[in-house]
Length: 342
Image (cartoon, rainbow, N blue to C red):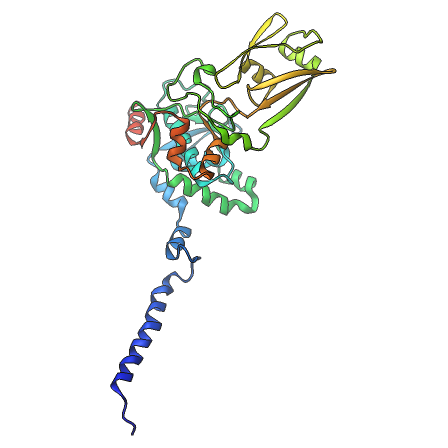
């Protein structure tokens, strides 16, 4: 019988260990999706049940008046924020922009819940599901909206909401009025140029990213007779009217048409314009109005937030740019105040 070399035996055992043991360690993760840069951590992230995590993270329920159904629905806070972010911001936006939106939306509803004035809310709800407050869509509505992309889209939104869970924006230890809108004209608006009150954290800041947004500049053509009847004016057939003054952010502050004066906001609201940064001219029997941006202009620009995110800014940098002097804090103590009031 041939004598076996002990060194060969040891070498064989080591070779088996090198080949087999790493394979055993990898097996538990083999069912997941991995890549060369993230490995097992990507698998764990992919398999998280974001919906369950959000339900566990919700520290209070929000009662939402569903206007179309004419009923009040009670929804866990973080799941409500998912429905708002999905409705208020394009899902294609960068994750850091979605996180910034989640912070703004959560702050908005907490502020609303703490408020003594429940204007426009029916049947005792905290908030409604329309643009009067924040648009909210439930799971079925989002499935209809996104069709075959629902699972991918909802996971992205839930992840962004979960990663800001329980956090809100405060100024001097009070939740802020977290206004936001679609896109600016290159600058946001001072709050007192749009609202009746001035908020120190809602001051005009640059937002150059918006100028690259789709439909940044839009022309709206209105027949002269419709323009006149809507505003209750008569134009002199030479020019539409005089833009008397503009705000710091170059939005129209006041206009004069004939012997009547309007604010830029009144013109926007009555004519359904995209923004208050507009110019106009007569073109035959029509008034052609050119607008820049979309929305009231106060607070966070959503397209601006996405532009900042694409340039490498994080969600906290985004919100601190658009809401000057604010801090990010845990919402628990503010929710406790709401519970006591109820």
